[in-house]
Each structure stands twice: as structure tokens, then as C-alpha cells.
Length: 324
Image (cartoon, rainbow, N blue to C red; front, side):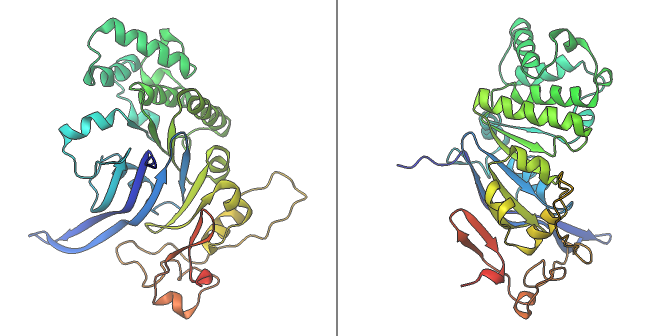
């Protein structure tokens, strides 16, 4: 029998109702995530990329059940956790943790960082203070911090050090899956590289799986095994990183990659500048959501939503250009 993937997300939806008037009448909905499906294997890094507002972070928070899904299913190691109560979900919380974008906002400014990490250990059953301190010292060593820094407050750390504290907290319960919600975008470029390399080292040491949310394609190329490109709440293309960067098929993916700087000044790349703005998720366009900005739009795109088709093994594209 084939072993199920660590994480299996199927047709995930998150719609926010819009209330208006004194009586709070329903005046529509924001379709933040609208039918997203993907898997994350053991020891694998899958990245979700796309412009701001495409629904990446909403996917991350919904998978963690920090916000409740409108539809679809979330399975962790084959067990459906989509509708579990808070009490029933607690054992699964140990298996998946999240690292947020802003490390300063993620830490209580009035708590010593050691206490912030100890809190999660205490909630999940590590009762003695001695055991907690030993575990925190071990975690700080793993992420490149000193044990004596446990007594410091968040404002006494740099941005990169604060993110290392957040990584230590995410590792505290020895999870199998860590979701990184743009965990390096708030850091300086030189510090980004250090944190990314740290995450990759921790993956090798602990057999971790990552769901990595980002908009920086250079970072994504470095850390990912597979990549899914999102646009307006949907995945428009997915492939392993080598295939996606060498042979992007969707016009949106091609435009994103054309904007990535190239270190070699002798190499020329034709930039594809997208016209217009991302449509509102309150009233997305009919047919293909990208047709209002697509340089290769056809009449069919305006009325018929494309289905995802596999153009090569493991490489799927939702575009009418590749319909059989």
C-alpha cells in the first residue's frame, strides 16, 4: 500500500463574507483561496509563489487551522484534520508549526525569549522547568544562538536573531512539517541567505518538510524541491524547480521569471511587463482570472476557466494554450 504524503491539500477554499448595513446583510464574498490542491512529501520543500494578495498566506494559515476553511480538505499523514475540534486537533499541532513573516510581532515584547519558547513546551506536556531549559538550550544551539540569550527580551536581538528564536520555537515540539509564511522577506539580504541556509541544514538534520510561502523567486529557487505558482486564489502552474525555471509554460509564470535579476551582465533576458492591476477577489473575472492581463489572451479565455493539464510528468499548467 502506498504511503500517503505528509500533507495533502485538496480543493481548499477560503471565502470571507462581506457584511453591509445595520443588519449585516451579506453583500458578497472575498474569494481569497478558491480551489487550491497540492501535496508535501516527507523531507520535501514545496513553495507557493505569486504577487501580493494572491492568497499564499491565507493558504498557510488555513492549512494550520488558524483560520477555518470554507471548503476542501486538509490531510496530515492521511488523517483528515479539516473539521477536527480544537481538542482533537491538539495532537496534530505537535506535527506542524509555523514561522511568521515578522519575527518582532510574533514574539511577546514583555516576555523573555526563553519563556516564549518554554510556553509551547509547557502547554504540550513538558512539566519540569529543568527539562524545558535543557530543551531550549539545545534549540538555541541548533539555530546559532547562545544559551545565555534565553534571558533576553526581543528588542535586544537583531531581526535575524529574532527570526532564529522563532525557528527555535517552531522546532520545539519536533514537528514533521514547518510552514514558513515569508519567513525571510523582512530581513536584510545578507541575513536572508543565512536564515535560508539554516533552514536547509535543519531540514537535513531533522528530516523536516517545509511549505514555504514567498514572492522572491531567487530564494524559492534555492530552497525548493517543487514550486506552485498562485494567481488570484488559484494555482496556475506547478512543477519541480528545475523544470519551472527552465521551461515555464503559463504566461503569468513567464512574466514573473522575466523580472528576476540575472547576476551575469552579459546575459540578456526579455522582460515581460504585465499591464494593469490584479483584479479584485471580490469579483474575479469570468473565465481565466488572468485574461485581463495576459499578453496571449484568446476569446475562449474570457468565458471558460481552464483546467489544469499535465504537459509533462509532474508539470501542470492551467492555461488554454495547452488544451489538447
